[in-house]
Image 1 (cartoon, rainbow, N blue to C red):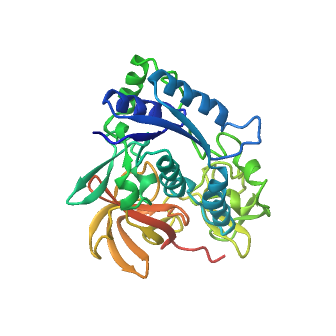
Image 2: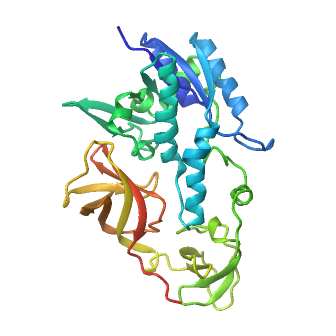
Length: 366
């Protein structure tokens, strides 16, 4: 008999089709909606009530049991407080990867088990299989939607209990399946960004929790070109929202953030996209996790991503000492950003990765 599966139903089309596909396979299933944020902004884009209603409507259409749980406290303690701490430290965190490990594939799974389900399914564009007793996390079939990058923090135990039915589909096919089945979420717009921020103004949202101290914006040669709103509002490689324009003696060309000087509260920028302050061919990472079950050997040639949607970059593992990774790239990488994740691959398999601590790009001396 097929083991029952609890579907993480977000109210979006991906999780809706996940439930539909499992239903068609005759799998015993139920849906569970998780609320991860207490949204006190009536104009906010994170409309949990609407999403819950959409998820329930899909469950009703499919004739499966539906449950809802509030994980806002767990999310705050396990994800959001880390997010704020990273911003204070001058880094650029990615809360989605931590949310997957701590909430979606931990707290959610615990609640699913309480309801009698040992296996869970999500709408992630990824795949998994088992070889010789080891579970592999694989890229989704649709290269434009692959979400294995966000799942690299899972461990073998979590992966063993996870299913990703839509990982075999391309997005256009998924939309077609949803429309033909008459799912109420078939044409629903995909969610973007971090749920607790949604499409609201990032600066305004973060200002509720962190104080920002304005300071100078300097070129890499130390020439003042503007004022920043607070270093927490910027990330390496950023082009938009710098407020620099019409500076005498400089061309009308975009400016890029290259360094955040926390001690001096200064933001450094350049107009040269190939500036050595922008490019790095090596990085160091910590907080390593290996979804594959084991770290790659030193000297292994593989591919890596330092941000979601980045094409695979050829790299070599230079060292793995005391939980730290040193990685060398064949080609220099733009804006290697502390706080972001570097994720390693062997072909289609996601091996794991870590949190970037630094790249070897030049640091302004001004």
